[in-house]
Length: 456
Image 1 (cartoon, rainbow, N blue to C red):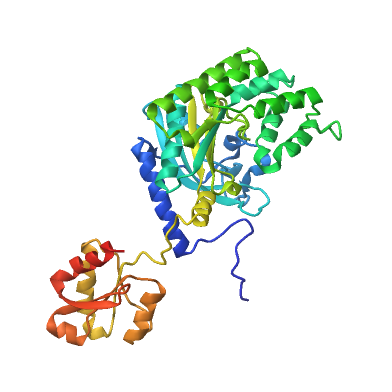
Image 2: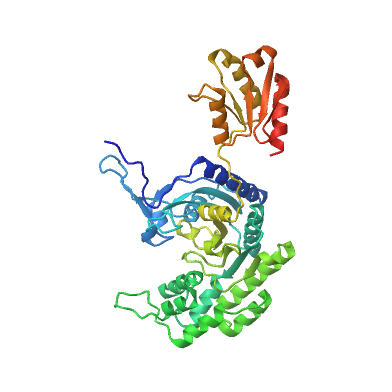
């Protein structure tokens, strides 16, 4: 029986042309992260389910089935849904082995057990950077700085990092009478506000007013006109960052959450200004909520102004309470996460990725078995010189057929050493872009190839 070569819904393959571009993007992000002093970390794809369930509702958990009777440790295991909860586990488990504050980055796949939609997959990659062990707002300012530096390094010029503070949102929840962030209704408020860009104010207002359809419907807020009006006034507070912060006390009052939230945002604005992060690339936006429950302070989202339909491509925030689930140690934390697949799609849409079909820079033509010792030495010399070199090993024996292979992969240099060249001790170096070829002595070939590649 022939099996149909298809993958499950919500998953996808990346062929070499896309993978080369993705790897270039990932290398750029890694370079920026390391320039800020972040170090790499790796964690397993699978975690104990109990480790993950404290960080998200069970519907997003992608469970792993183990055959009964074949394992002595019958544990409930799940694929990680993000990289933040595993980080919290790691820093709790290795508190004595790490230096504090701990700055780490991690690039890895995560999985969500949700229905796949357009642009949303069950398997996708995230690239995170976090600072654990610092309660200073300077750490949050550095995360925003890092987000701006990364976007600039990738070639984006028109982007903005919008940020808010969950303490301010907690104060809003208290102001309209639905309790603090420990209550389910406050969490639902944050989830609704997080959908503002997708469904607009009318959609948000409808969800805020929705009455419960049964006694079990604990998520319905059923807010009245006064509360909805307060929320609208809150999220539509505009002006400079200083003007927005000055307007908040009249809306939120002078409770601890309001006072602390405004002070923290003010401190971040001061740091970003002192750093000199371009002013057009960041701003306070009171509509930013972030949907996950574990955020406790500043929250961030990055939007591409030339591709707003892509949504947030880089987001995060402060999560001081998450580590406490695993340890009694006080380990405040803040960080950001890039949605690699979404960001890569945005780069393609805006023409910021250069397509390449292969990593091969030079192809050595293979005419006959008798000449192979010579072309092997040639390939070795090129590889030792740092040139990505491929020896043709296909079925074509004719020069034209092998040359067509190079054309199909857009290989920039072809090296020809047939019988005549071998007798003369030379190699013909063919520049595929200029359609020229020149004979060189064997020792001079690496420099000749490098000269061609330098002009690409």
